[in-house]
Length: 371
Image 1: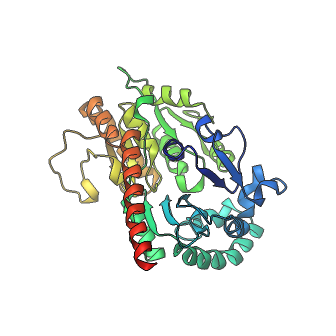
Image 2: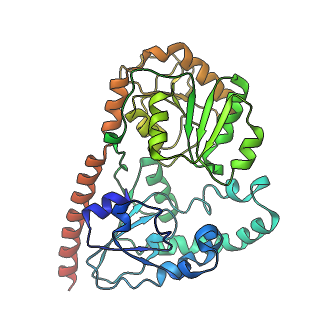
């Protein structure tokens, strides 16, 4: 998504709290990148999450007066930048800050965080919530990545967002003529991704599962995985692409705000076995015995791209995998690929360009009337 923004506006200034040089693509690295004071704090490049309480101050210190348009890409504090009255601020919003709203308990309770972390989080939470709501008023137009996120923006900010789905680079992924005997998960090993549900389900099933990804949950997940499960850690884009093409199906047990990974698997012609919630409902066409958990049979779509399970438990996922094994020949890889192509990068690029041009034109008319 950020690459597309950089391609559309190659001469723009790119502001960010922190930049680890060499960590992003050349398209992004070649921009005029301007960082906050967090860039110079000790250990910030590896322990930046610990500086969350000062993120609002850092973002507000950027001087963005004099710009015609500010396009913020925000899942935390970017939408809180200060702009002048003659600047149009469009926020492409991945989510309101999830660790202070909907997923606070997943990040800051139980075995996932220590006592001192939980205590500190409880003090900071109310401050961040107030700042998050207050700073949302600085945005002229919100664009949500999905209907699921749009509802959250309405709930927390009382704003009515537009919706433009994020892009998947379909041209990078190629369907294979065959599949190997393993299922695949591609995910950061973070609490909200619920990789533990996938691992526990496949512990029960005893069939091969490969997990690509790294993160703060890695040690815990390795400790609960049986021998039929391979945690591969971080892998290159090429390795990820090859595993999409080779797997039987993608396993996606988390509730994602949108979910690029299921679309990458579909661009590779592979079905997705996913929890029936969040962004997955907007990107996967299910072939289910019991749609939406009703227990009723119904006519199945010819363009199905996956299977849902509706209870967030390993047993429910294991049952969905067993069902998939029974009907896996019902899926058509061309139809699966076709669904992914409706979210292609080129589609996104046209939509976001046209949107910004339209909103800027409307904004200039409003400003001229006021003046």
